[in-house]
Length: 165
Image (tube, rainbow, N blue to C red; front, side, top):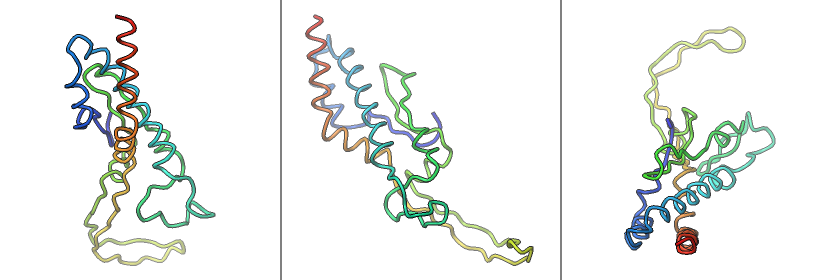
């Protein structure tokens, strides 16, 4: 998955849950729990972290300074969970090329160049820096899910594993 992504196994809290499990049940419990946490993170990123609307006209209204806002729906629609590396990892991310710019921010040096306005008049643009602020949507979603729901998710997965034993 290209674009922005988060590997949930990198979380210290999740590592602590996994280390506390007995080796016989660790595999099935971690697989079930990590997939649930990944799906919850995906859902929160889509429904909470990217806010709907930013004024009457989303095309001309300026972006929100600290939070990513919905424009076309392409970014939120692209957020998914990659399970191809299961059970080793679940990756929540986006395939949209501009996702990392929103997640991490970006500063770019723009060289001087010529432009043409809507009336066909040519003008010179001076060299400048273009700054795109960091407005993460994956990291806050994962942080929230891990801090508020991970323990419950792991307990449920453990109960299921013990119920089948």
